[in-house]
Image 1 (tube, rainbow, N blue to C red):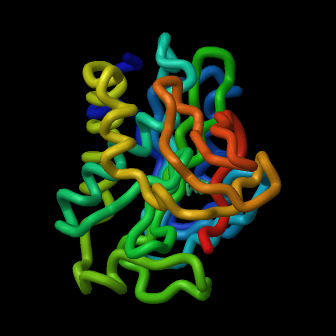
Image 2 (tube, rainbow, N blue to C red):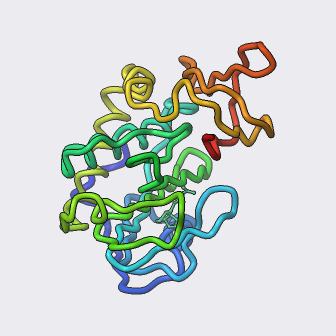
Length: 229
Ligand code: BTN
């Protein structure tokens, strides 16, 4: 485990292009055990080069972790940890869309970007917490559902602590927890790696998505579930 989260060097910005880019810069300068968070991002990055909208009130942060020997399941572990904390705080059902999106009422409410540099992973988490409205059909916010305003700093600290706890002590449970909270199981969805609509069945023990396509069961190791119909 890379340090304890209470010893992390913290960098707070009211405005930044991307906490992920700043975290990467810190890593390339030789720093470790850092946490970068911002009130607003002007160029937040999502997976696959997508723009990540970061409206005011949301929680946008990046930090470094050791990859250790977790390898393939690292990103799912971060999703599992983040989901748990959010469900505890908001007391409403939060699901995981493979590989690690967080879903509230069938809409995306948070996203996770894990970028690996040798044995370090820069973990970037974006959550629509105190965001009143998002201008997107497939996204939602916790405030929108619960009318609860949270302390973003406290939520962030709890998530980092939980990520460390899951990675250090509960890796053997990650797949089971993911399965219990998996969104779109049994539904027909577009899966990017296959380029077509398939039935989502499960996740395998090594974290692949299991689908039924052309009357066969297939394992998908890359890409994501895009749209469910
Ligand atoms: C995704 O679902 O595509 C991942 C979204 C990750 C967004 C977070 S917000 C904090 C950090 N800074 C960024 O520029 N991206 C990540």
